[in-house]
Amino acid sequence: MRLGLSVYAEIAASLGEKAEQSWALKQREDLDARIQKFCWSKDRFIWAIGQDGTFYGTHESKEGAVYLNTQVWAVISGAATPEQARTCMDTLKRELSTEYGVMLCAPAVKTMPADVMLAILFNHGTKENAGIFNHPQGWVVMAECLLGNGDLAYQYHRAYMPAAFNDKAEIRQSEPYVHCQSTHAIYSPQFGAARIPWLSGTAAWSYYSATAHILGVRAENNGLRIDPCIPSDWPGFTMERRFRGKTVRIEVQNPKGLNRGISSLTINGKALTGNLIPSAELTDGAKVIAILG
Image (cartoon, rainbow, N blue to C red; front, side):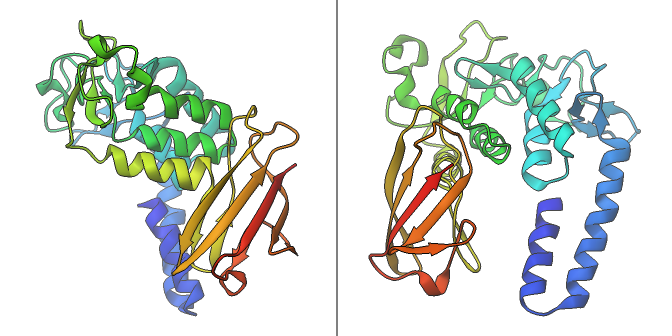
């Protein structure tokens, strides 16, 4: 909701709808106040508040104490303060990260009511009950990229890629060229086994998080944003991007071994300020060079 309000306010501003923009910003302000008052628990954002007022996913919880979605979307939406953003992602790494991906929650759920979350319906370490649900893995990548942590973002990205299991086929037990809905996590005796291939939003989010956040080429209303967040040992990369009927050739150089931060951006030899290429500058076959520095 918070991200939606931000996008709505931006669109309203671009259309000159000042009243709509003010409404959205006021709603966001009110929402932020409630999030800060009720949803931060020491080093994480809570999971949920039950109809009876019970808080779930707090630092004192015995089960489901950390929930992936609320950490990453607090960062992606901008709800988290800079300090909260880094803290909650550190908690996610410490409590949820595994060699095969990030678990949806931990520890596994045993008693949480089904009307709060249906996790209790599944065996420990599978699907929503502390399994490695692959759909939101791209969100973890996006959150770390937004924080500028290219090395960690790429580590998360590679962990759940099907090809990362090519020498562990007996563990993954699924096709090496397709994403699965979920992977058994540490609470399961089949840790690493992938289940339900071909039925997942994982592929779409993996593509988006890789191209729009690791490679950092994002379509915006006014043009094309060039904001890569890559591993520090990458010397750079090249890619082509179709944007509004035009093919743009992009080269990113990383001479200083950084993760993020464009110091120079040119299009067809013309220097630009910042990292947004205005739509008017984009022509078919345009050559973009971006340098991290």
